[in-house]
Every structure is written in C-alpha cells, then in structure tokens.
Length: 78
Image (cartoon, rainbow, N blue to C red; front, side, top):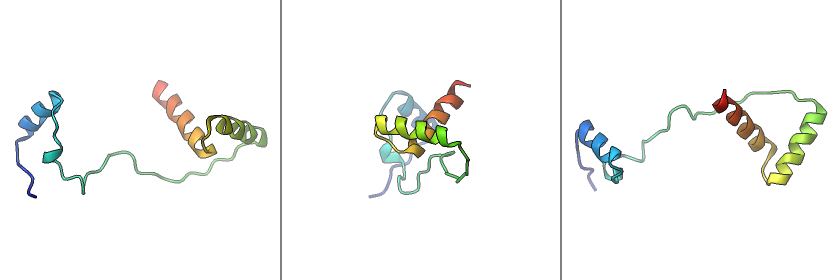
C-alpha cells in the first residue's frame, strides 16, 4: 500500500494535535537517533559487584541492566 504524502508543516500540525501519523511514516527504515550501543569495559571492586548483584536480584534484573539504569538516572539529573 502506498503511503500518503503531506508537507512537513501538515505533519507537524497532526503530530502536535496528537493525531495518528503512522500512515505517513516508513517504519521499515525508521531509526531512533543516539541509541546505538558501544561496548565499554569497566573494572569494579569485588564489594561493588556483590552489592550490584544483590540489588539486581532484589529488582529481578541483570547486573548490566541495573548499571545502565543507575548511570542513566544520574546523567539525567546532572
């Protein structure tokens, strides 16, 4: 099915009004910027790993998840 075409101004108005704009998007090629991942290596002392694992277990998440969440929260509040 061919997508409809509208101007960027019309698109902005629809978006601002909270209307459904998905018919104007190509979701097969859509990307969210700034979400590409890069691997980093961080060394933690044993006591810190134990505490991270305890907290992760309490929350039912992985160690990596809790580290990413806490760093994200700290960066947002900075």
